[in-house]
Image 1 (spheres, one colour):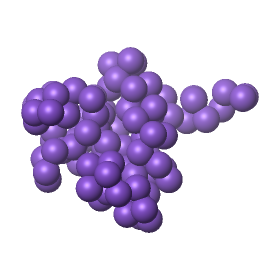
Image 2 (image 1 turned 90 degrees about the vertical axis):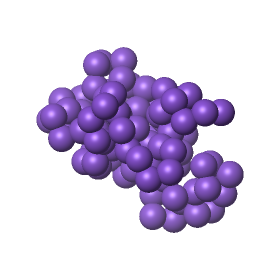
Image 3 (image 1 turned 30 degrees about the vertical axis):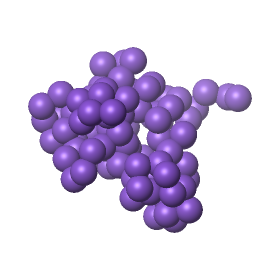
Image 4 (image 1 turned 135 degrees about the vertical axis):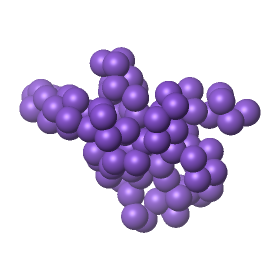
Length: 94
């Protein structure tokens, strides 16, 4: 899978945290699994917020390395919208 394909899926290749040309450097969520982070990224993207997953887990091959959590990063310009959307999603009863 190429670098562009990985970005489109929300993965971070290497140390680059780019979301549509702007550096995604602001963590808006830290969750215990890559799956949960991918779900959050999908929700954010479906609402027009650029977001990527950042995890130190060998590209998903070593989940035990996720001890520090999996981060959802957004560009600073999308931070407020991302935090609002995540808060709204947390308020929805399951």
